[in-house]
Length: 120
Image (tube, rainbow, N blue to C red):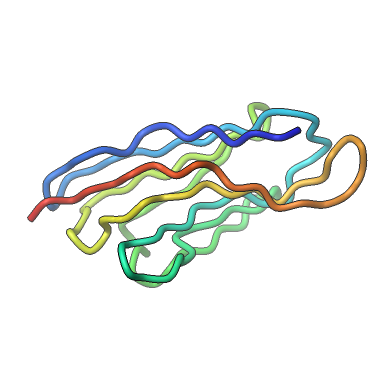
């Protein structure tokens, strides 16, 4: 019913920048919040950044001041601009959406993940 399609990511040197995008499609009535999580090998999945429909943002302490999240409500999309990347930012990044379906009900959806690798 709903798909989250991610784009961006890749390999970058330490100190570089990357941008991630995610678009939600399907029978969506409204979106409450979209965000990004990441999971490094052997680690738990953690919140990176999130943005509500009202524009409120939340960032992990480790990325504050370096990452910026924004949304495009008309396109049901969210973007993550990542600057001053560090090797410890290396992980698979997952897009998430907390949304209401046209058919009713509130659900959380996840993208398939996109790899971000920061070389030292």
